[in-house]
Image 1 (spheres, rainbow, N blue to C red):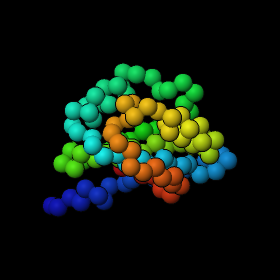
Image 2: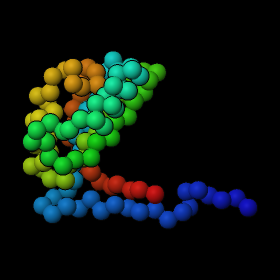
Image 3: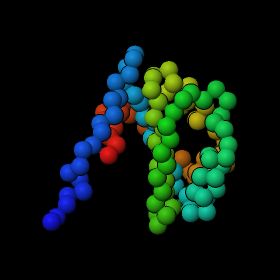
Length: 114
């Protein structure tokens, strides 16, 4: 019997929020080695968000072969995005994973957890 692991029911998470659509701040970084990612992971788990930072979900992806990373921060409202972007853009370079190469704002079209 062959079981298709992708055939199981999935949960599509609603992204409609009161006052608008969820937003994502997507930032790419270069010069991010494995050691730096381990440091950032520890700092994020042990520390607190910056003062005034709105509620958000953070996902950081890392390509250790290319020494690049992608940080995705999900915000529920435009105001949260604005405040979060202002705080994150003002962070000292030493508090980021590496050299910031781009910052892009996206509407979150779909989120799904299985």
